[in-house]
Image (cartoon, rainbow, N blue to C red; front, side, top):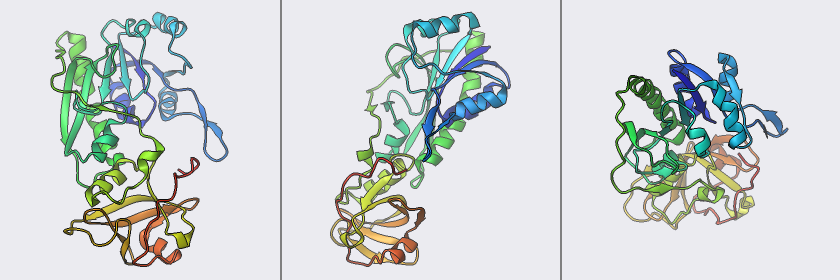
Length: 321
């Protein structure tokens, strides 16, 4: 089968590798190259790099318009596959392939339609999620279900770990679905149940509210670890600079151990911080403009002591990774 792939990040790379062994990837469509890093050097995305290494044609349209549709028509495409592309395909493109275009969505639809479903599942403390393969329609994430697979979410699993597992599940599901489509055996079932929706993360979503429970803050830290990162601000004696927190561990004490945001104890490895309910052990941090370090090293370098309180501060600067 001749497949035209739309995707922009690493999530679909395992699927591309698996499918290319038994199908023809006619071309990949990905985002245009853009400047990145301190030197703002123009860089290629991971999908383009994969395609170049596999000898697959790369298309990087600025717009998905009628002109681009005309470029695709001569390719005699059997199937369009969209995995983490981030843009809605117009009818002029959806109608090109022989079979209905399909999309991989990293949630159990109709739950978590929209952007950042994996991140929000972690932030909301969900215990399970999954992969759903659907037919594409003019309305985002509302197509009929071709296949799905559930998986539990670990209590301390972060966005990087969850993405890797769901990407592997996607690579496992897609070959079967595409084979069934080609053989005329695929069954497309309408979505059932009450839908829920998510939105794109913003930088402000990473700001820690220490009034929340230790569980809620722990979930935020693991959910936004890739971007924008969970952040708070150093105690006033250290200049109220932004402090990103990359890993934590819950301490389920009853009631409060101090005021929200108050540092209860400092050890060689962690900081214990009081939350609205319970406390949190902070394990790995990054001070604005510095390298990522262990919390114990941070405490020694910035003379952090029990009784100090993280400040409300401001928003993290746009330039911090």
